[in-house]
Amino acid sequence: MATLVMKFGGASVGSASALTQVLNIIARESSQWDNVLVVVSALDGVTDMLLEAAQFARIANQRGYRRIAANLRSRHFAIMEELPLDRPERNTLKADIDHLLSEMLDHCMRIASNLNTELSPFNSDAVVAVGERLSARIIAALLRQNGLRGAAVDGTDVLVTDDVYGNANPDLQLTARRVDQVLTPMLERDIIPVVTGFIGATANGETTTLGRGGTDYTASVLCALLDVDELWLWTDVDGMMSADPRELSNAQVIPHLGYSEAADLAYFGARILHARMIAPLAQRALPLRIKNIASPEQTGTLVYSASPEEEPIIKAVTSIQGLSLRRPASGSLAGVTRLVGNTLFKTLGMRSEVLIASQSSNSSFICLVIPTSIGIDGVDRLEWALKAKMAEYPEKMPWTIEAVGLVTAIGRDLHYAPQLLAQMLDSLVDIEVYGLALGASNCSVTVALPLNESPEAVRRIHEIIVKSG
Ligand code: ASP
Ligand code: MG
Image 1 (cartoon, rainbow, N blue to C red):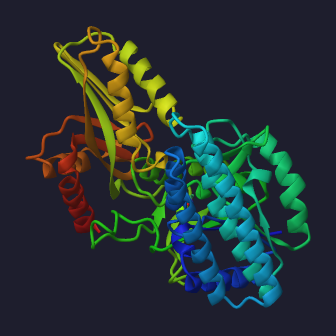
Image 2 (cartoon, protein in one colour):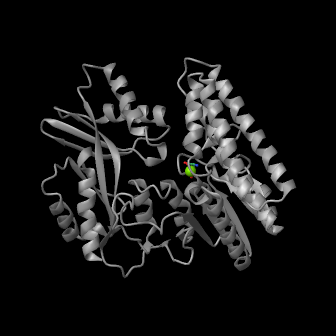
């Protein structure tokens, strides 16, 4: 029995024409494989709108969140109108959408009635989870309408997670039981489950989310628990690229990446993958393909075990924001690292990720990676929280905090290729480098530098890739 899991990201489900393409792809693959399971994101931009609604609710701006609910309703209804759905299917869908949006409004009202609190991830998760529930229902209906046995499944019924709201982790044992109860019987009956990505629930049934871009993670967890042969991620670019194509027009597709390379690329800033999604796949040696919804015939990127014959090479360059802490004194770093760790966990629900810690006779420097999965304002939130925390200990903590750029080259066996490291550093000759780290997985080298130098550093390192290719 060959089973394929396909994940469709927000960018690939943004419009009626994109959804028609999704339908064509599912129809084609379901005739090639014994079983197909689909995992979907919310429609493009919907998660951001829902987060905004939750923010409006926090300040009790009823108009604000009601307006967003109305916009979401018209957006989903408009897409439905363009899709070939018959009247009963359309009516059921409309009723479902209205029901979900009224649940969302209830959550917003609950937040609004509880003023003077910060918006907790617990509260925002309940609001945000509606996005995937809306899109999964539309896609399942579209499948049914075209002779395929699609059924929407809520991730809250399948993924059992811890209670780190906003950035939860699935419990594999508990989730495996749900997978057996909910998904396996569907696959046995030739149903195509259309599972909402990104969302889960605690063992007590409280809704959680897995961090931005978490639909990837849902897909890989399901792959680890079902007997799956391949995972394909559908997106709106040709695969994983040598640089962000929105920043560098000569970015090229990377045909093949090892698991660690892909994980580091995601961890150090490429938004195309959720960094935690790779581990479950690597453990089972399951091939992952990243493909463009607009050109399905192209092979895209294959993520798999590294092939032993590959030479050391830089394949990609990426950038991410980090936070640096510096003080004009050396000494134990344990206290500050603990403080940063606790603040990070409290503010963003993540464990501390110290990338660089270096000291000389009279100064100390620490640099943290802020994973993209916490959302675009994560660095600001953390910086703010840390400054507030440190203000409580003025005598102990003469640390200055600065947002920095972390530019990372990803490639194979970079540790064994001093000539590549030399080339990379040489290209940065007139840029101040604050720190340098070789990734523990042998496939990444990161330089910390002033935030405003990041784009230029990326461009120069990318030139090395282009010239070598
Ligand atoms: N819709 C969620 C987000 O925008 C999850 C995902 O797209 O993977 O982050
Ligand atoms: Mg999304």
